[in-house]
Image 1 (cartoon, rainbow over the protein chains, first blue to last red):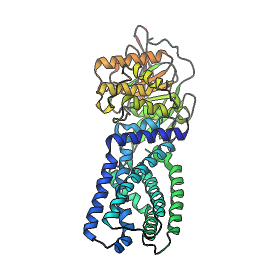
Image 2: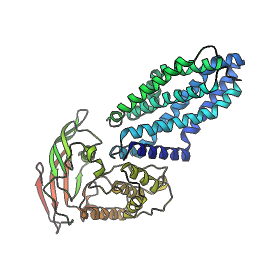
Image 3: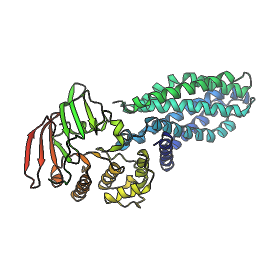
Image 4: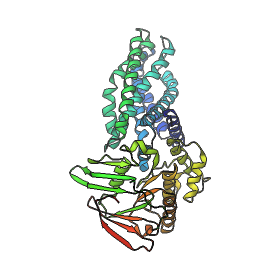
Amino acid sequence: MSSLTVTRATLWKDLRMEWRSKDAINSMLFFSLLVVVIFSFAFNPTAEESRLIAGGLIWVAFLFAAVVALNQTWARELRNQVLDAYRVSPAPPNALFLAKALGNFLFVIILEALMAPLFVVFYQLRSVGPVWQLVVVALLGTWALVVNGTFFAAMSIRTRSREIMLPLILFPISIPALLAMVDSTTGILTGEFSPDFWIKMLLVYDVIFTAVCLLLFESVLNAE
Amino acid sequence: MAGTTEPSSQPVIFLQNLVKFFGRFAALRDITDSFAPGRLYVIVGDNGAGKSTLLRVIAGLMQPSQGSVSLLGAERVRDVAHRIGYMGHAPLLYDELSGMENLRYFAGLYGLRDDSACSDAMRRVGLDPDLERRVGQYSQGMRQRLSLARAVLHDPELMLLDEPFSNVDVHSAREMAAVLGRVRDQGKTIFVVTHQAPLMEAVADEFVHMSAGQIVSRQVMTRSTVSVSSEAGGAR
């Protein structure tokens, strides 16, 4: 059987389970809404100030919200020890990883699509630079978060306090990607500097970490 | 003998100097043994005897600390994974999906795309393939049956079953034991770890007794159920 078939089947299964339970989406939405509302009341920024701080604010909100979804990813596989059924099957381990990463990517992208209009309204955001570049940053940045997040969430599933472990491992390793995401977003919103360098850096980060995660996932899956 | 298939001389499982440590605790202690195909083995022993650990090592879910396992002539379990069925102590099923949705997903992992394999497996264990209820709403007995259906779904040559009758009522457990007997009669090799040995007496070919991480004896069941004990340690 091909990796693609297993990836598609696993992704479809995860989407169906999320559609029925809505565990990840509801938690992420609630968390992001809290951040948007509380920060908008706390800072009450002008449109000009908003452009300067929005990059950091948006990505911090999405990063923390993504952790909620990432923790859910493997929790489903641990219930009833279903992961063992996958491990004893001839299905390729990388197909499982890709399906999980793609599923998380979809969940976080949906969250971003729902939250973006709220950020625009609450922070009076108007982009000076081209908006399509924001879409590119969102896609590359989200993949950077979920590919590492899915991998490290898998690493921490056998630890006792895995929900604390994940951010402890994920945040430091995501610093280069976060820098690129925040600076490129600020560059696009303010139009003061070109985001090209940061976008290229995000792309390189994505390629390197996707390759490393795919190479190492089998060892993580079968670790005792 | 309970089965109809004569064992061949080629072992389906060969364990050589198998040792498994958890920290300083030796769960398996230098096990060397072999098992013939087409037979139903029942592994019995007290809690902590190493039964489940042995099954997990054979299934490739744990790596032995020392020694080796040869399965169906292969040194790597992964090479013969499509020929092995495993049923764990937990049901290994998604609570949020229905029985058929679960089986469809697992069938995909074995390259099976035809729904008929899934519905056949469900019927074999006495479940209705049209049941739309999610597994989370199944009774314990139904879960165990579905778990067995998942393990036999791809028609494996070797089945490794860990406590398949736990939390199952006696009637359902007897039915499951009969299903296993029929699967063995088709030439499959089955390993069952259980504390409910009497349930398997009618269908078992051999009882394998474990204690303190070692196979201490093997008891071949004859047609008249007169047992013949032998010391463990050599190929049979």
